[in-house]
Length: 466
Image 1: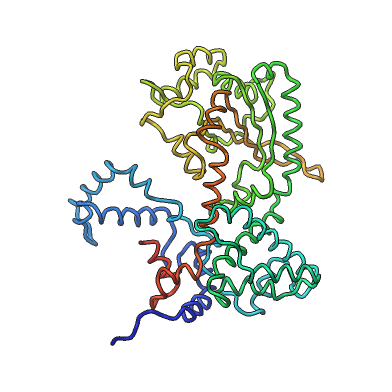
Image 2: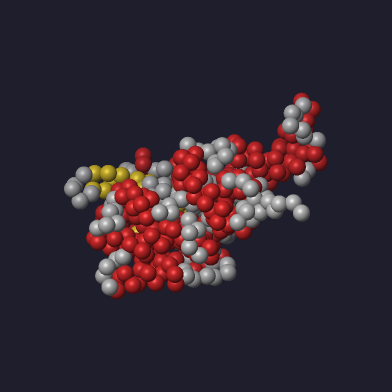
């Protein structure tokens, strides 16, 4: 009998941990473990290759494509481009430092050195207490915002949880609990604990990041600035003629952790809805009018029009119906924005029902919106405008902070409650978080490849191609 090509987990684990620093360096330069790039063009090409191999035209391809085949390929792409793009899921194209398979931290000395880079000396009790606080919050977040959405559900094992309880109870904040998480993530303890240790570390990193990110430290000031703006709006009778209700809200801590975890490329400076203002109006026509007045009416405007982040604006309130295409509606809305008094006439032409069906023509605005938030429901209706608002920090220095303004009419609010409830969004987000933080680890790779005689980078690439 020939020698088995399957390797022991311990051998696979040790190779992966030894290779972790090299893989980490390659990640930082935008490469995979074995030199593959993570550029968008390469990712699209990889998906295209898989798709073509299942098509008639694909079977005609060779490593060196001739001119004839190029023409056929172009024809294929023109016909099927939309379907092609839809096959490129976020999991296929995102690689971040947070998603590394293993940090490769095995010895106490390696872990000590690693934590010092984050500003913690594990030999100092005060620093160990801070680390405990972060890990404890991470465990709480897992219990309440990851566990409910797991499929199947698994709780954090007691081998990871109990040492922290002991350290907190006896006030020693012992090192062993901290070492245990890192070593478990590297596969040096029970194999079954690897995903939970990796999840704990990933959540903990986000919590640490939040403690040090400048914008998040300004949230209280941003909320105060929004409250001040809301007071100005309420004091303006012209604006209040259109407004049914208005409220400002701040994304709470667990919401911010979830936002930073659920999409791999999220950073605090790219999360634009930390702070928001929600305006409820009676009709879609009033939505157009109030946006015009809040930003562009010289007598009544409250917010700066020049700081609107146009690329991040989402118009999800008005959609085409009957013979009107999306392009037709956009042109009509543009006319209404030039003169708000035309808005009533515009919507008389559109009809009283605002739950319109999307036409195929020019659906890019909505498609782009869905891509920017993969967990949002396609049934949700609102106009979302991101703009930057002037606020002052505790030292009195002025800075700009992004605010999300949502404008919604009463009919759409009712429809949203039925067709796009917030609970559905939270469930989708929670499922995405659970899948991300519990995946990309040594145990997952081992179970899928059984440690075939290749490095963990090659294993990962093999899985991605399946």
